[in-house]
Image (tube, rainbow, N blue to C red):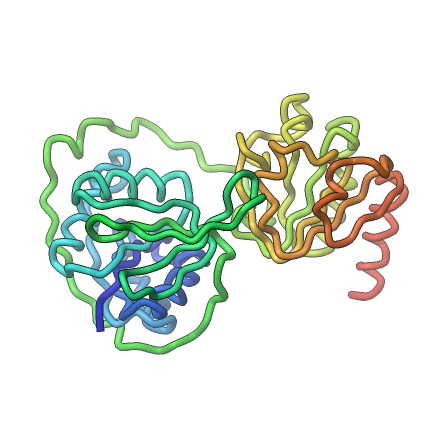
Length: 320
């Protein structure tokens, strides 16, 4: 059976959910071979084996932390040359897409980004994508070289499938290009205790209708009652009401949760491009003609300051 290379997104050995989803998809195409790089790489083996990795290639070197993505690209290229896989799968984060693009150029292959599903085809993996703000669904495959495919979070379930997970050291030698851009400092992001926006199963977002930074507490309270991430529309971010890191939309982050709740968001195409692939969409807006209602599964016409607190209270009472 063909081997499928899976790039591992982890933090000091803790494997992040999008990688486990990639292993589910990789098993549809062949035998997953995981590539874990950096501090704690060897500690990822147990989780990766539990979810289907037949082999785990690991490498740790100061270059992975001290320089930007090129050292990781060169390590992934080394893994590609050692394995000769049928495809390379990478999580669709900002860094993941840069790594995938650079790898595709180096190995002379085509690339597909932001896939939402994968299936085996007679001539190679077939990727499903959402195009034109999710107005269309397309299926495509790479026709040149080994397919390099990035996959959006929440595109597949996390499924346990115990495999050997044999750990092997990956030999990597870095070129001069790998040390061209040095990281001079890092500032840890302050934790909110909420899930990562792009990985969350539930996202609650607020828009222009929230009418001020001081009112986003209403959105946060609903999110916390659901164990959800908090998002914001571009209008809310541009007004300074919420950080840009929480922006959902074409110029922000793209999310695809099981449940997306939009409060006080009109539904402009810019926002829809970032959330339209959500499995279930609920909108709360006092304007019955708001474009957001054209794509929702459930819509509530009403003032969010009346509806959202009642919804939060009901959720908390049922949990209690």
